[in-house]
Length: 470
Image (cartoon, rainbow, N blue to C red; front, side, top):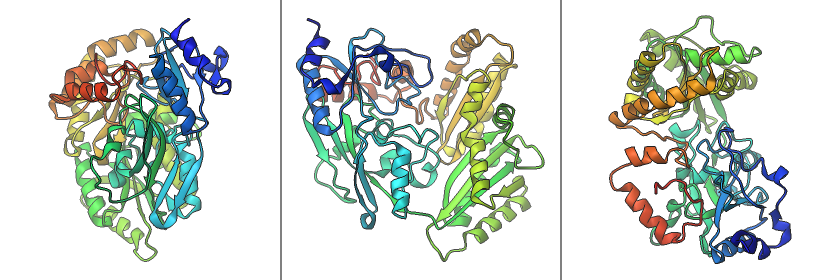
């Protein structure tokens, strides 16, 4: 009898799905570039059932791939094609366990969709700062497993900074549970940090406690035309200073990215009268009913105009206008798909070097493929730029992709490395960036990661072949 079959015999039937028509959606990665295989999909409803599954897999030494919302860009949530791993989805674990308004905390199952957690916080007059383009489908356990970023990082930090406690099922089925939402807890190692960004290779996150903040009473959103990309860091500094650190989002959009979007989604409109090569979506918020945030932002824009750092701008006058401005940033990935998809580069450098990287990388691409379409946008506040290359009209997409990945992508990653940056800002490693980690990972890091993996998961059963180069 196969080891997988032995595992399934040990499990309650209502946790197991063998119907390949159902399974097919779970074994295809988010970008539809990789298709894995598995005998069965396992869908636990609570932590105890996750422990039952992991214990059975440990007993028969069968690998298991954890999956949240299956939104990974790096195939971290996709099983291998050989069918030798089982897939565990946490989608049925979607219970809100506790919301403590006075403690500004929320505790939930790891399978809760991010937008549902946001809504729960909002109903209590609070806000969960983590905000992503995929928030209607991504699940909070996956967000923590990849240390997700998003549009509010400039003020609230990555997902890691929002975590107060975790509950994790370990590779032998035992439980690490430190869910109490305490702001201070110096009782030994901060063990939970091991599992944040580990992409399910050290344990299966089943419960989370997160920080909340007070819901903004004032929100001001502006769309600005920037004269010179080299002034991005100067504008951000001025914005944070003038607003008293109230800036939550500072998002860069290139003219090419905006034009791709407007040509793909004709119902959207350019918010400014004149075009520019560079744009910024700026948002500032405050929970104070007293501070005059509008006055601060108006003073900022007047200063930026006077200094000739921006040539035009508009401020959203309603929630609908705010939504429309944000669509110009958040819908860019859909526009790339419309135009044939993109070769993605998830780069981060120091914020002070972001403009220089973008300019150098654009010149690099032009030397190889002057006909390529560049879609460049990202989170200026944390130095993360999505430097994506889109095939020109009429190009063979497969040939173009292979050409870019072979000739251009390695030079982009080398440029980021030489500028003290990284090839993976917020997408993680998964399966497809193992070679880049091997080439550009910090000295001694891979060896240390291997030792941690061996100590916690000696048989290599959790998410095999991901994150750690062999």
